Amino acid sequence: MNSFDFLIVGGGVIGLSIARELHKRGGRNIGVLERGHVGKEASWAAAGMLSPDIEADLGSEFHRFCRRSLEMYPALAEELKGETGIEIELDRSGTFCLSFDDDDSLREIYARQIEDGVRVDLVSSSDISKAEPSISQSVCEGLFYQSNWQVENRKLLQALRTYCELNGIRIFESMPIESLMIESGKVSGVETADSRIGAENVVIATGAWTSLIKIAGSTFPVDIKPVRGQMIAFKPEMRLIRSVVHSSQGYLVPKRDGRILVGATSEDVGFDKVVTTEAVERLYSTAVKMVPALDGAEIVDSWSGLRPCTEDKLPVIGEFPGYKNLTVATGHYRNGILLAPLTAVVIADNLIDNVSFRYAFAPSRFLGETTAASV
Ligand code: GLY
Image (cartoon, rainbow, N blue to C red; front, side):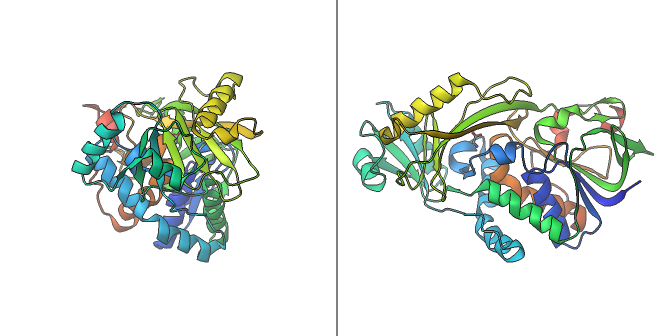
């Protein structure tokens, strides 16, 4: 039986980032177990937006956590380049949030965010046209966030995987785990359909699949629901936009290779990853409404991913009560790429340096009076 000092279950951006961070802090004998292919689920399907002020407006502690993680990206990009030679294409052009309807919703957001100390500018339609001439003339006004960025998430995953491969972190693919093995109140490892893997410490980073894991004969008591996001991509001959552009209908994300990604649906359909004609048509018309020059452009790709969503839409990060050597880092919902650097650091702080988690996103909030040992 293989046995690891640190076994990370889940090979998405969260699991790989944790593996790298543990290794950088001196952790050794690290394994990553992935049910399918490493980095090919939600983290691969993402658009790579790093938008704490737009997508993570769910309360101040969470917002601060998101901002701290964002601020780690410039150093992370440099480090990964040095460690792996892979450029993760961190783009700091900024993000627009535009209104195409004459309502006050953006002004209300602006007033609240200014009061909360968010760095945001209220911009007129002529400011928008100057900055992004391809945006529809029907735009009314917008908000501009200079410090909401984007990254090429697929390159990030490639870099993280490469880091693991170069540094002796063992990756196992096509190995869904079924349950956690418990001995004397400790997690002693995991069971797959046909094997057992021992571990001193287990980190659950299984995203939308977390609730399928069994612990002490019961369903894992952190309820995570998959929320499907469908996306399409264009690759116009000319570069039509420079910044990430949001509206109430969806978002456009221009990539360095010339693609413009358009996202995304938000659907409660279980683990079904099919791409539907209806969604493709809706995303297409959203894109054309925002950038009319895309009318008639070829859709070069379409795909979907499953966001891991908890009941309160906040992640679940921290020690699992009742089992000292079980840690959870999952449920990152719309913010997995954004939150990967800081999630990795707080997990490594705990596992390597014994620093307690002090965030409100702990698993205990879902366990109520039930102690983990009794589930
Ligand atoms: N973070 C983008 C999305 O969830 O669609």
